[in-house]
Image (tube, rainbow, N blue to C red):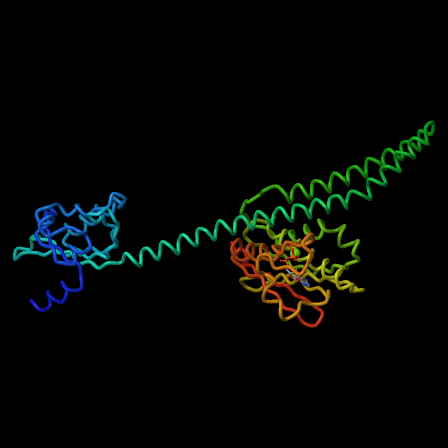
Amino acid sequence: MNKYQEAIESTNIVSKTDVDGIITFVNDEFCKISGYTKKELIGQNHNIVRHPDADASKFKALWDTINAKKIYKDTVKNLAKNGSTFYVNTTVIPILDESEEIKEFIAIRYDVTQEMLYKQQVQDEIAKNKIKQKAMLTQARHASLGQMLANIAHQWRQPLTELNLTVYNMKRSVGDLAKIDEYFSQSKDIIKSMSNTINDFTNFFTPDREVKSFNVCESISEAVKLLDERLGKSMIEITLELEDAQVLGVQNEITQVLVNLLNNSADAFEQKGVLLRQVDIKTKCDDENVHVIVTDNAGGIEKKIIDKIFDPYFTTKHQRSGTGLGLFMSKMICEQGMGGTLGVKSLKSNTTFTIDLPLDLT
Ligand SMILES: Nc1ncnc2c1ncn2[C@@H]1O[C@H](COP(=O)(O)OP(=O)(O)OP(=O)(O)O)[C@@H](O)[C@H]1O
Ligand SMILES: [Mg+2]
């Protein structure tokens, strides 16, 4: 028994207290870590090493447990005599006498200060990364805002020209009421469609973070509509083969992912000068997931860069036209926002992006 005790005492921090928490015994290790001498400790309340930051509810739990004659285990933050902090993994055991009453408490601890500091460092690092990631997402949003504004400008150019012409015609028709009426209603139609364009984009830009159940196909149609002008101008043919699929998430964000993919395809077509430009968008469901498959024939992605395209700031485009955040943001949305995945495959001159999202089965 003595040998046993020796073994424990030489490797652990050991103390004993009476039923009121007054220290009756400490070993050398306890003195070493706390900075107090045995003389200073014995007779003192054990809370002499209590850290002011330590959670009061923990002490209640400790006393509740040991007074119920049960063993208590926890990692505790303590204060040494010189004001420094140390962490100990603590086991407090109530010792009972013959009549099953608590006689004293024995506490066995070991030093985990290094581990705790290391853990703290890791947590700080994670927190820092989160802040960095948030800044990147903001930057990505600004970049796509710029792209979208350019899209609106494009979508307005043509109707503005038409409107200009119609107003001119109206002026020329002074005296011809029937003609004026016709030009008037033409103008109204053009204005209405311009207003619709603005509505589409406004809807897209409202910072609507509401998580709800929505049909993925609506997001796809929305993205195609928003990019209508750009796709048309680049003579890109879109084929849709859509199976309805309810998912849970922020609808605008999935629209954003598709806008990113379609913009990338359009960029690739223009860069490679492909003649017959084709993008196929398909949705397919199985029992648990919907697979959104977007394939283009814009030349493919080279093997040596395909592992990097989701990295933040990776771009093969001119600084003006790409920040390299589009796919990074898209992956974040699919994986962290929706609990799904976003992957890519490239075969010869085709590129296929696949978004897998869990179905909302409720
Ligand atoms: N459909 C595609 N075909 C060929 N290359 C692609 C395709 N999609 C992405 N890439 C490649 O992946 C890179 C990264 O795409 P990502 O959308 O993240 O950034 P970006 O388009 O360069 O810039 P940003 O989207 O921030 O404006 C692109 O620069 C391009 O080289
Ligand atoms: Mg992009």
